[in-house]
Length: 87
View (spheres, rainbow, N blue to C red):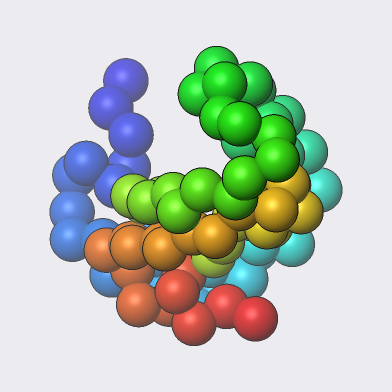
């Protein structure tokens, strides 16, 4: 089964309503936190020095919160303006 976002333009699936649902979903938040923490482990960055990281497909920035908490700086890009505008 294909993902719905593969069958039409992103505006249909990443509008303000869907972006708000995604950003406030506790399961999504937990999964994003775990994946981001694991990605940092795999990168094996030096603990004492902050790094500048690029988050491609950052969505509403859930992963960026983990990066910031770990002391890193990050730049996020996403195809969805609605996701980028989430608080």
